Image (cartoon, rainbow, N blue to C red; front, top):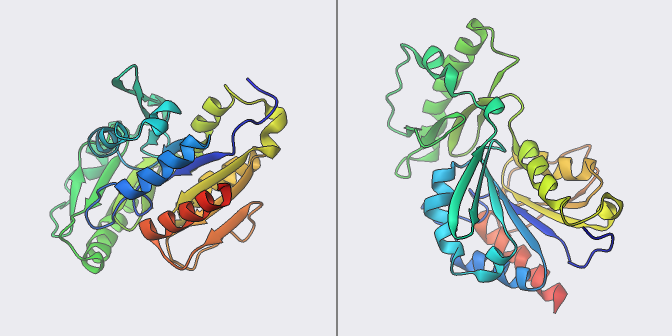
Length: 276
């Protein structure tokens, strides 16, 4: 552990709409190349996503093998909104589940007798700790919004009927509906990342440690807020394009003209230029 910061900062990325294409869900190699260059300059990098560990296993970490500077930082992904940790350790992919935040035990009672057939979404059974319905790549966003809204109302009513309002919550994004533990979220993922950060920096220099969080939805502000509350010098890069800001933010917020992966790439270019 050091009490003097010898690296330029920490990068924390959501995945969907931030480092991947929202239509194909493929992780951008050009963005990974930029991140690799920043890691070469000393940045630490982590991922904080609602995606499953299976997605990271199949779509993200195989690509990271082509970017040795990222892997050299001992990066990992907090999946399923902070409940599942996924990493590459000694060449092996490993996962760790925070079981107290899992809600899969409620699946049968929540979904019993509900009509789950739809043209715009499917049940994502790869999730280990939450219940997720994800948008089909071939479906329009308008159709998904309509169909998933109906499902959300039904499940919310079931949660109330079962008296689980203090245990479960529903989070709807552009591409998914997640039924999750009420304490799960990007802030929980941020807390798990901070536990790792504490292994190499002293709490005394948190205020001098720059953290850049990247997200495309309101829920991503949770991770920026958590880092700021823990006294990190935090800047949130919002690439979602929607008119949302944390009115009470005690951290910097940057919104770019370009959105989603193009916005992320644009900011990383600026960050690289500032280091040259």
